Amino acid sequence: NEAAVDAAGIQPLQPVLRAISQIMTQPQLVDYLDASFAKGQGGLFAFGSGADFKNAKMQIGYAFQGGLGLPTPDYYTQPEHAKLREQYLAYIQKMLELGGESAARAARDAQQVMAFETRLAKASLKPVELRVPENQYHFVSVAEADKIMPNFSWRKFFAAQGVNVGQGFSLSQPKFFAEVSTMIGAEPIATWRAYLRFHEISGSAPYLSKPFVDARFDFYSKTLGGQPQIEPRWKRVLGAVNGEMGMALGELYVARTFTPAAKARALAMVNNLHVALKQHIEAVSWMSPATKAKAMEKWKTLLPKIGYPDKWRDWNGLSVTPDNYFANIERATAFNYRYDLAKIGKPTDRQDWGMTPQTVNAYYDPTNNTINFPAAILQPPFFYAHGDDGINYGGIGAVIGHEMTHGYDDEGSQFDASATTSTGGPGRPRRVRGTHRQAGA
Image (tube, rainbow, N blue to C red):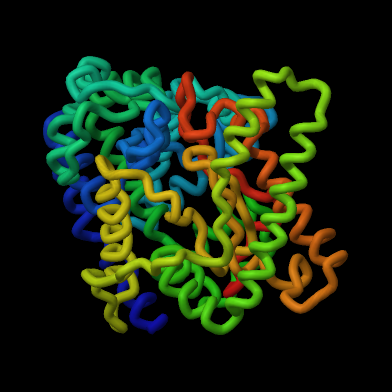
């Protein structure tokens, strides 16, 4: 009901904005952050589950740097991004005005938000630095984390999330989190309120009325992304469903587009290429015998996953109604966050998927040594279930080989046959650049 969404304006977000306006002290700020994360809405940093890189058979909690509205830390400091910074500043002011602030106040608050994020950016690692394993994994006890962040209680945070992290978790970028703690104690509460208010409005904009949708599109999709015009609403809503309930949508997609015969043929191709990879490793002259032995150990444990999960996800407990788009998104976000946190402290499931079946993409995951090919990439022109082998090996075969060799590249090579690394590092899924597209979009 687009008319109802437009008529509501900022109203669906008012409870959150009211809670932010009531933050007056440092303890109230920390309480708000705890509560916001518990609803899956934390943005100051990222928190979720992942395989322990010292024991890949178990899932632990990972806290990762975040909190920025621009793509990378360089955007806040490098001269070549000066114009984009001006445009981002204007976007911050626009969102604050749409949220009810006067133009004068929004202009002042936007400057504060920009300075705040610039400070966060200077404490953040750049993408190239994050490829170094030591910069992506830092296991600490809760007590040790509290020493790094004396103004933020991780014990209370985990209690608010309802999660038991056991002996500890990865505070992945200690310098960043130490700076966050310092900012909690040093930045004026008014600045924190402006920062939180802006990010709540900006993050919620796609699910609010047209002025919010248009403002976000103009900056993120048009200015940053180069997209000339906004997609029709039905595509945007489909994208939201795909983002929040992608596996449910994927179950429907697979039933219509991917037969057991297609899955069997794709798996046969993967197995053939796996044998070819073994022959290649055995034949290379630049590997020492010891290195080849390690490579072959890893080759033996590679797990291919084709099309879709063997067991579909259960959506019991998620309430979706036809009359409140914003509330549906809120509930789904919280539901998915709790689903992810429930993995912490449990064995790693190598059959778990990090992509939906309707994603035209593929990835290698070094944390469990798997290669993953969603059903949507196993379609023409990459793959023909009843087509010629030459076409298929020249198409999807190249993608399969690409993903297999990620296990031996600059990141994958740091994980052994058990998906454990001696240095640590959250090896996130590697993807085929330039092919990421949702089949249903």
